[in-house]
Amino acid sequence: MAHPVVELDRVGKIYYNGDVETPVLFDISFAIVPGEFVAIVGGSGSGKTTLLNLMGLLDRPTAGVIRVENQEVSQLDELKRARARRDRLGFIFQFHYLLPEFTVLENALMPCRMRGREFEKSQEPRMRELLKAVGLEDKLKVRPPQLSGGQQQRVAVVRSLANEPAVVFADEPTGNLDSKSGRLVFDLMKRLSRESGTAFVMVTHDDNFALEADRVIRIRDGRLVGAPVGAPEERL
Image (cartoon, rainbow, N blue to C red; front, side):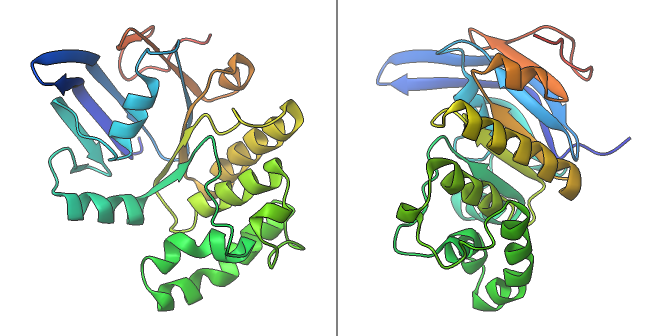
């Protein structure tokens, strides 16, 4: 059996505002394996985005342990966390966050640039191929304001794979798109996950997309709902 790319062991999260404690997540345990496409669903305020931020090393748990590729990352210092995010994790957000002054190709390569110009240069042929694979081969020198919303999000999906991450975290990646563009972006993520062997973890409010995931993890009031740890979560 494949080793998990992400593993959570009894993870909890409390936010503090002076003397006021706001518990958000309680005793969360599960694992994500390579190439798995997982949907995280739950009502507003259930803790979905907080959970994604913890797995993506954008926030720290107040209890439990998080491992990425078998490395305990919960208590790494900020520099090591930043390097782990850069080198091993990919991100897609509801808004594409492309840089308007750079071309499509330059935006897709931006995570590579953070690792140095030589690395960026070495990855350019692969990124050109990925952009071609998502139908943007004629847009490489175009800047984001000249693209549709769906095209911009496709660039964001390709960008998330720039550093060949072990896992990509997607927070409502279709939430800002019309239904047709949303379907294209969702299908693209699933296809790239299969082809690259990269795990995708997607927070979504769309039940139809969640049903097409390999596994559904449901959260209610900060707690997992459904099947036991280690088994495929129950379908919606």
